[in-house]
Image 1 (cartoon, rainbow, N blue to C red):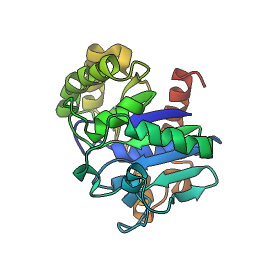
Image 2 (tube, rainbow, N blue to C red; image 1 turned 90 degrees about the horizontal axis):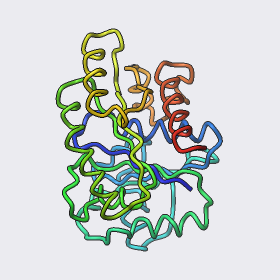
Image 3 (cartoon, rainbow, N blue to C red; image 1 turned 90 degrees about the vertical axis):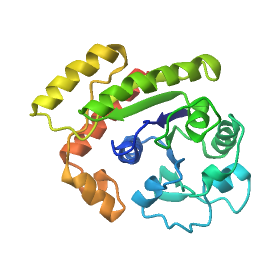
Image 4 (cartoon, helix red, strand yellow; image 1 turned 30 degrees about the horizontal axis):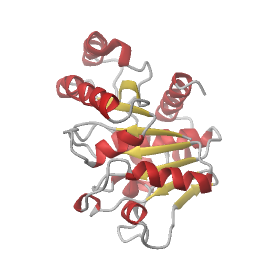
Amino acid sequence: MKILSIITEKGGVGKTTTSIHLGASFSEMGYKVLQIDFDAQRNLSMGYRIDRDYPYTIKNFLDKTGDFRLTQKKDNLFILAGDRNIEKDKYSRYELKERIDFLNSKMNLDFVIIDCPPRPLTGGVGLGEMALSCSDYVISPIEAEMYSIEGINELFPSIQRIIKEHNNKLKFLGFFFNKVLTNTRNFREYTEKANSQARNYFLTSFIRQDVNVENAKKEGKTIFQVAPHSRASLDFNELATEILKEINI
């Protein structure tokens, strides 16, 4: 089992969209995948049309309460629903890791994808810190615009701190551009700038803008169900393939 967190320190850059479609891409390749909605906003759950009052959530999972239940989208694709109250309780740093390990002993998973909240990693035991403290790998989507590029300098040191202090097996696979218009000057300029700042931590794959992503969201489906031959589906498969190569699978 490989645990992959997807994290940003600002919202609106496609973190949850990446979580959904990257996990779906792995499942299309035949891997058994669990996606965890670890954000109180519940965007991943909403993206899959999981009701707000779904009877089992990440909070039940951590609290060891309720009757265990996942949403199953395919034979090998499962979702652990989010909870708006997840940030109200305090958990130990490695509690998520312990619960995932126990679940994996029952399910024999290939991948766990954690959709983290868009919050700064401040050093306390917040949800993002918990996720990275239990993960094997982490990636971060950014956009070809000034604020996202500046975010590289803020997020990377925080990840390095967690590696040093709490999880020395965590590997930062890199940043990648999301919602890209490839024929614009901005994309070319910011690609050069991003590479100059984080060349060794920048994935070559990127996700192009595609209306089919929004269409899939409206239907509560993945891009592979709605438009399997679209630009975005090809791009997410390319990103998944690059990640598999980086982690030697």
